[in-house]
Each structure stands twice: as structure tokens, then as C-alpha cells.
Figure (cartoon, helix red, strand yellow):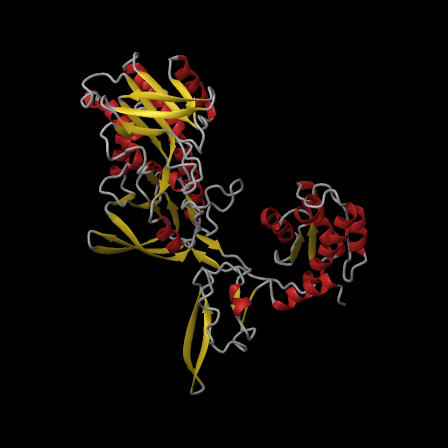
Length: 549
């Protein structure tokens, strides 16, 4: 793309007083230059043609605000993503398209109007949904910053999946730490714990949520300024490989519990197992659940090393598709091989088979490396089961108006830029509810989510976005076509008496509205519009794109 040509073209457009070329428009130096040019040329609108508005629009809005302009008198043309990146080998066409985008942005900028943000007070407390490791960590972090926390757990006891983890790869035993964490939660005066509880309704928006909780048949309503979703996940319940049909077919968590109990593993076989076979990717990386559960390989290596520690003569086989002991855990995989653990790779289309024999169990697998079928007589079969989301994730997602992905896990706003945020302001995410992750990762994400939540709770009030819906009373006749399509339930139908007749109209809850535009798109009478995206403004862009003068 020929940027100087686009700059020269911009100078020829009607009402354009000044245009220049910058290499790094988002740099501090250029921000200061923009302020100077606004004052020098007495500019009343600013257009920047560069990066995506999603990441840089707030920066430029703040810059023109500091120069004395209303921040909504700014328009952006995304020529990086829409031209230079996608058409990098078509210089001429990319240049022509960039001219079009700049012309459209200028056309809309002429019709921009100054907008004002509404300010709402903040309720200085948080709701944490889920009492596992991530939920407890989040609750303690927020409480230690001086804010009240409502911690809601569906089970009778808090602790989540960590209650089933008895040792780590580095030799640490997390149960004592778990007990300490639970004690801290229960003894903290700022943490209000509800167990065997269920979220019934959640209303409101950032800074002002109202949630109804069902507890042992009773109902209680709480008010809070932010929400952290830490509902966790659970172990896949296998139906394959004779699980549930044979007492010697276990999951990795069940094996760990028996190993931690001492002789519990040995009772069913009368002594140390001669052979143990572990099968990876059970309930993961298949047609129903195509994702990798990330923890299974590490868990298998951990238990294999523990078996070798307790019974060095036991033969341990790990049947795998790919070993994914990511991070610094790769060294434990090497250690397991050095201690005699045998790793046999199988193909997705040739999964292992498990059958009974007179001595116990038999596993048949086709070894990809050797290119031959292998038969293993074993005392135990251990299944490395995947991590699956809780069924009520969908219900929580609907209550909070946040998305879940195709697998049923909660979906963050942006993987890199907003990894613990939802698109819904004031709602954050942590732990296994997001996707399968290690204990360390869950703690770090919980701390990050708590920090984000605290940035809201530490304020006295918060400003809402200016680009939201507004009702045009002179046009609205209360047809209510806009009510049901609103994904945020921000619009309600009103009826009242005026001049002796019943008047119907709609009302927008500005604290809930996100300015998505569904209402404007469905209204047949121009009775509602999104500020900054009026039909006239969009029409000016369309005319500019078509070259209509």
C-alpha cells in the first residue's frame, strides 16, 4: 500500500484541513503532535487511518479529549487489518481500497456529534461463583484488598478438584495447603460463604449487579459491583475400556487416591502390581471433544513416577497419541523414560483394546514405531480422562450474558488483550471454567481476575460508554419490535397516559446497553438509534463508498 498517495488523496477531500503521514501514530510523540495540530488548525473532527479501533480507538479518543475535543468526535479507518495485511501483495488495489476507507471515515466524521457518558455509583463487593482453588484464591485476593465477597459453591464443601490431588510432580503435597486455604476463607470476615447454593437470577450491569441465590430452599438477594466466574470443570466419566465393568480399570484421579491411601491399590490384586497400562486421550481429542485437555499427560507421568517410586519392579506402559508435558514438566517425562516407563504411541484410528483374561486384563495396541501389534497382560488399566465443563455453564452464561465456546467452556473477550475479561463489562473469568489448566495457571489467572475486579470496586463510580441506544420519542410508537432482539435485555416497553390517551414507547437501560445496534436494525420507524451510528452517518459512509456525491 502506498501510504503517501493515500495521504495526498485525503488532503483533496471536502472539509479536510490537515493530513500527514506517520510511521507510528500510536506513539507518545505522535499523540502530542495530534494535540498540537488540533490547536494549530482549530480542528473539530479527527480521523486516524491506521490500526484496528478495537485496540487503539480508546487511545486516540483520550488524546483528542486532552486537546479539548469531545472524545466522540473521532473516527478511525482500519487500513492496517483491512488493507496492508490482507492485500500485502496487491499494492495498487490496497491503495485504492485505503482511499475508499479514508473517504468513508471522513464522510461519517462530518456528521459526528459530541456524546456524554453517564456515571453510575459502584457497589463495593464482588460475587465469586465457584468455591474451588480459583474461586477461593479470587475471594481471598479481593477480601484482602478490603472488599466484601460473596462466595457461592454448589457442593457441600469448598475445595473443588484440588480435594482429589494428593501430590505434585515436584513432590509437594497440596492437601495441607488446601486445608490452610479453606481455613483462611472460612475465617475471613469479608468473605460470605454459601455452600450447597445455586444462582437463580443475575440482573444489572458493571458496578451494580443484583443476584438471587437459592440456599437450602431459602432465597437471598445480594448486591455487588463485579463477578468472577470460577465454576471449574470435572473429570470425564468414561464408558470405554471396561470402565465401570471391571474393578481394575481406574481413572488417573482414582489411581492417585489409592496411591495416597497406601495399601488401597494393592488390596484387589494381593500385592504390588506386576504391570500397569495407562491409556491417554480418553474423552479428549475425539470427534465429540476435539480439544486437548492439557493435564492428562502430566498426570500420567506423575502417577507413573509415583508407581516406580513405590514399586520399582512394576512395569508401567503409557499408550499415547502425543505427549504434551508442556513447560518445564518435559524433564519429568525424560525422568520417567529413564526409570523404565515404556511409552507406546498409537493412532487415533487404531485405539487400544481392553479385554478380560483369566489373570486380569489384556491390552492390545498397534505400536506405530515398531509397526506391529503388541499384546500386554496387565494387572491395572488406568485411563487418562479428559476435562469436561459443567453442564450448568450454559445457564450461568445466559444469566450473565457471556459466551461459551463449542466445547462448553467460557470464552474470554480476547485471548491476548483481555484474557480474564468477558465482553460483558464487570464480569471476569478464572480457572478450569475457562479451559483445562494446571494448579499454577489457575492460581495466576484467579489473581489476575481479582486484580481486574478490584479496579472496578476501588472506584466510587464508573463511566458508561457513550455509543449506546437512544429512543427518538417523536418517532417511537411502542411497536416493541426492538425488545426481543436485544441480546442484553436492555429495552423495555412502557405504557403511560398522555393528553388523555395511552402512549406506548420503549425505554433503554443505559447501564445494560452495549450499543450493538440490533434495536436500530429492527426498528421500522427510526424510533431508536445508536449514538455515533445513526442511519444518516452510516448512510454517508455508504454513499462515500459508492462514490455518490
